[in-house]
Length: 356
Image (cartoon, rainbow, N blue to C red; front, side, top):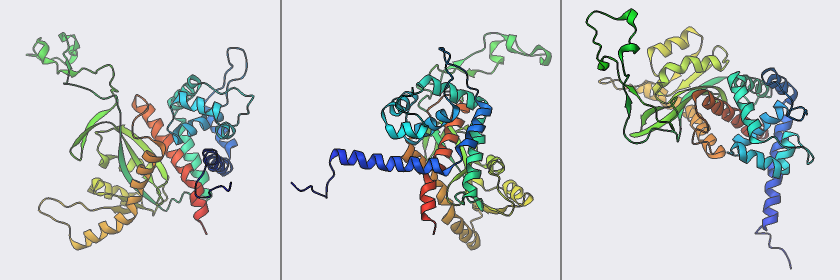
């Protein structure tokens, strides 16, 4: 019987998906100098020995597992299983069928060590430097915006407060005459529920209360991530513009684009003093609407600025990263930086192919 070319059998579909996956992994392996990346990892992650005396797993292998984990939205347990079961995953991280796969606890310890030493920031910078040499990352301009990462570990029910029990909490060296010994002289402190991530914060956005973190991001004009800063969700966007720019290694004379949430005389002054062109959208003030020139300027900026929204949307859709995976602001920063690395690498083969 002749096979119907309009449909694919289950096995055909599986093979086609495997080919696409393997092709992508080959492109990524050929894209970067992994020897240099391994040297950076080795400076921050010291390999020990297993309980039976064998050398532990290399940091590069564990970093590649972290990339797989981010690309496919997997937990530590799930990525261990997938590397065990999937030949393309196994090949990408450099294992053979005879090799043991690191278990979830090894990956967790690796991430903890790298987080404490700030190693992921250095990896993002190095990988971006390599991509810049290949004309994939283009530092001709910067787009700045922020996005909220919700955490499921948020307060529930009514607010609970914990009152300090006695005046011993009052610093006697700063005590003034007339200060009362009553416990109400000490401001009440909110009691943190056991399930809550205390580093998160509430913010009201579009009329909806959200709890979690905010990532302040700078991208190039193609939407590839150059810098990331992580704060509680209630941090104002406007005061982090300078920090995002400084982390981006942006050359003087480049234009910095941002929406009206970053509009302030202080930010415009910073750009001018540091040799950058202002692409911050104008914000109308009460009783002072925008003039036609400002409206035209805002429209021009918006034609490029939307690309960072595409970056946020792509990370959420492609990597299933709508929510915080970890607890604490340091670990959440690791999540955001790994997402940035994964996103830039994910888009790189397409950018190369689109070049004439």
